[in-house]
Image (tube, rainbow, N blue to C red; front, side, top):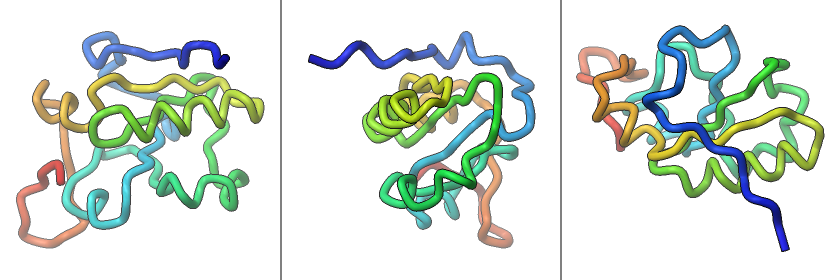
Length: 113
């Protein structure tokens, strides 16, 4: 039996997050299409090999497209000693609230893939 994964509603997420506080665990194509400006990107399946790249934030917010993958990563990171929180509704919710998005693709409007 696992404990509940700590979660935060997007409405309660600070607009200005400390540098490195948002970890995006979506795939590369999703990240390229559109992501939060200051997010750190490590795809979910690469997390175990790249733990040394995970930011040392007091509170780490983990985000994916809708909250499923980030919930698994949050549980994994908390078990590994981080203080991580899953962002409910993920980038879908982020975009719906009008939070800023940037794209890695030149001359392309950022969007959530």
